[in-house]
Each structure stands twice: as structure tokens, then as C-alpha cells.
Image 1 (cartoon, rainbow, N blue to C red):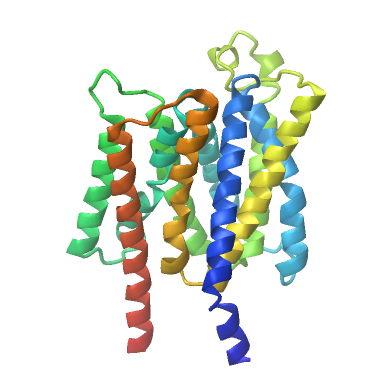
Image 2 (image 1 turned 180 degrees about the horizontal axis):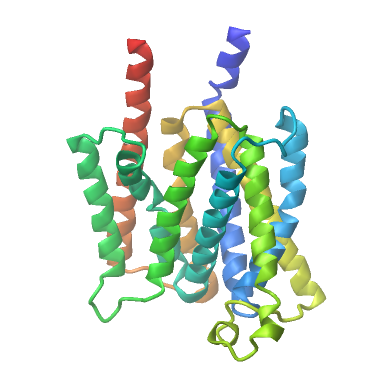
Length: 314
């Protein structure tokens, strides 16, 4: 039994392949989200994304879930985590809509930095000097990309940074939930809450037709054409499948092996943004993205090493 578990958790080549493929699929989904967000309200795009992601995720539940995914000992926290995740997703979608794709992706990747801070503030984990240095390096990367106060600063960057911060809060909630609920249960409630919340943004088209949120295409409804329905459905299917690939990558190999490949999302987004929207990255994006990537990789590796030392001490 021990050998079976060890074999499951030591498949680095397969894990790296799953991570690279999964992140590439996320990049394709992000590009489609950006394209569709220029035509349809953000809430509507989210509703299609969450609905059609149910197919791959239900397959995942059937294949890997143990017991009922409905059973939870912390219903309120599950709903709260789902709502935080929904707002984080909405901010990311808005960042894709209003910002160059590579800029938005780079900033949303800073979630690891915020998570390191929250781990010290909320989870009371000790944050050593080297970890603080990594956090400051990551924030330097964020500031280089956004350049607040400069004429090139985009207010939409607030959406990307907000998405990263809320993602960190969501992960903290998951850590608490993991003590009592299975991962499948947490994923199920996340999908459920996100789907319900995104659907609830649609009636604003008729209830508040003069709202600025409706006029700016954030909430509301525009009847999609059949070809666009296929694209919107593809966003959900690709997103759900990508999540399964990334989850499996972490399941069969340790974090330090696969996490560096997570940042290939930045490279993909640069290429896609250039090809389809003629978005040319500047030197500030290259430097900032590099600092965020190095900071995130160091924080994850440090976290894994610390846990290994703690286990050996036991």
C-alpha cells in the first residue's frame, strides 16, 4: 500500500505534462473570455463558463470523489469561500476585458504573494526574513507592471490585483475546510455558488436597465448567436478540463516540481495577446512578470521545505 501511494505521488514527468497542458488550456480559455467579454456582459460569460464547466467536473467527482460531495460540516464557510471565489473570478474576467491579456495574467499570478502574507496574519504561520524578502520582490514586480501614478497606469489593474488578493483569501478558507471536508466537496460548493451568483447577474438587464454596470457590460444579458454559444460553452469545458489537469498534476508530484510551470501562463498570454490583439509587451512587463514568478516559486519551495522539516521533527 505504501509503495502504491509513493508511486502515485512520484510521477514528475507526467505531472509536468499535465501542468503544462492544463495551463495552456487556461490560457486559451482566458483569451476566449477576453474575446467574448467584448460582446457579452461579464456576468453572462461567467454564467456560461460555470455551467459548462460542470461536465468535466462531474466526471472528476465520479472518478475520484469518495463519499457524497454534498456532505459538509462547515456549510457557511463553504458558501463564503464560494462567494469570495466568485468575486475573484469576476475581477479576473474584468481584468481580461479591460487590460492587455499578459498584464492581467501576470498580476493575477501574484496571489501566492498575498497568500504568504495571510498565512502569517490569519493562520499565524511564522514568516521568516527570507520569505519577507520574496514577498517584497513580488510586490516590486506588481508595482513595476502597474506603475501607479504614471500616465500608463490602468485602473483596471485594480481588478487583477483584487482577484489575486481574493484568491489568497479563498485558499486560506480552503485550508480551514480541508480539516473537515473533502476536496471534492469544496470544489462542488465552489462551482454551485459561482453558478448561482453568475446567473443572478443576468436579470439586472431588465430590473436596472439604466445602471452603469449594465451599460458598461458588467452585468445583464445579450442574447448570443449559436456560434457564440458554442464558444461560450467551450470556455467552460476548457476551464473545467484545465482545472482537472492541474489538480492531477499536484496530486501525483510535489509542489516545487510543478509550480514553476504554472507561470508559463504568462508566456502563453504574451504570445496570444500579440497574435490576436497586437498587444506588444514592454520591458516593464517582462521585468515585473519575472519578479512575480521568482517570488512565487521561492515562496512555494520554502513552504514545502518547511513542512518536510516539521514532519521529520515529528
